[in-house]
Length: 206
Image 1 (cartoon, helix red, strand yellow):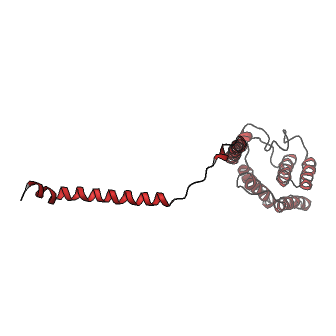
Image 2 (cartoon, rainbow, N blue to C red; image 1 turned 90 degrees about the vertical axis):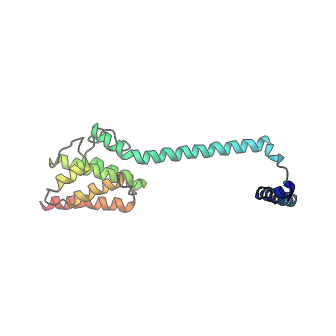
Image 3 (tube, rainbow, N blue to C red; image 1 turned 135 degrees about the horizontal axis):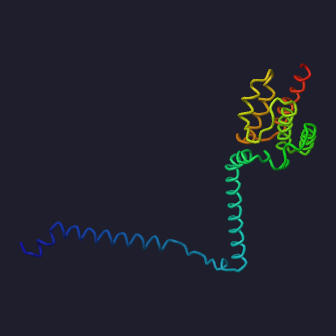
């Protein structure tokens, strides 16, 4: 057997031949596919200055919306902690209502609550009822004002009262509104308002 015949029948030569044939077949198939692809129309209109200006405006609009949405999500996460910080610093429980929570009387808070309720601002209406209750506790010397006191501490204190249920309803509703993600609705306002009215009923009995 000659050297040339041996090389052509060797395993290495056969593999080399197979690779070459596979390569030729693949090149043939890709050429066929390329020939069957229709011509892509020219998109020269995309180079129009007006189109580019619109695209740039849309891009910055989307970026702005993303920034606003991100800021809102961060605020939603941090607002409970900021509320606690304001309590620790002795600042008001909600700056949208007043800067000095103890400046108004019980009647003043109730009047504000009714005003916010008529405007459909149930969050502030509920908060005013809550502050009216705190002022009521202070005026009657049941629980005196203390800036660092939390709702949880108030709940422990009112638990010792003869009729703690109305107070507990208002405190727990306030906690859910600020920390539990509960929506301020007309129904929630009615629950808190009814609890406050129950305080008056209990006071008349004593």
